[in-house]
Image (cartoon, rainbow, N blue to C red; front, side, top):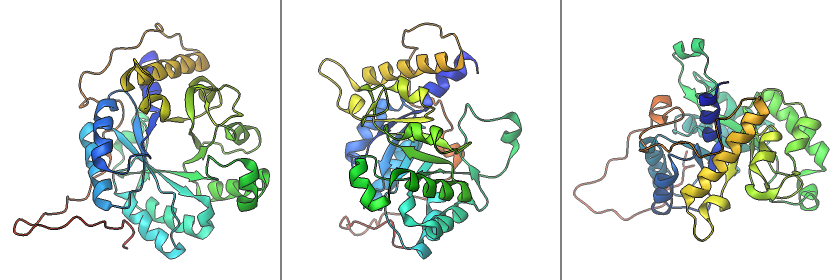
Length: 318
């Protein structure tokens, strides 16, 4: 890995948590401002399909990525249909909760895998892979427990930690999922106690002021990199920036910490501790543009003759 690839990766693994923004009008200005400075955005599946569709179109326009957090329960026989829809949704990554059970996950993953290959990052692409004609599908990340639950609260619901992890390992390995979502408290256990091999790790609760020993609810970017995290999800340090700063300034500070931590980890001499030049326009990209990865469905046609009231349409009207 050279220094240019190192910067590409450092920028690309930064994901901004947009879960507090349920509506496009709230999310779009932030996405537009931050898209040249971060690797993508994490959004919850909105109750309104039109709102989620607008966010995907904005992501395509800004050439950024969307990680779609499902965090929902759907009957086993409907999970295949859901996977079929999300395969062509335009998202680069999706999550699925392991409490859905093995059969539901099997239906979901089998449908997602038909005629596709897993999304690959720009810094992971090998020359021989570029000739493949198969379209990319979103990476599938599995969730064990809600990351904000304390162990004492999680145990009655999901069982004791290592029993829960063993069951989780069986689901992830048998269905060949692409990644797992970790809390700062649990990420070390994925390497120390559970062998996942190629599985990617996405960690929430990243904060430069967080705990450096992975025992708290937050973790510093450096500690996350040293714990072998592949994606870092950040919210408060960027969105709720301190007085006198800005979202861009805070994003650049976190990028630099990630960049230096990766350089040290891989033994690459970084040029300096100064922030690299920012991209001038959001039309440039440091990752696969969504429109090069996957085709979005056509936009719904609007009636020219009658005014229609806005209705909330469920994404799961299968």
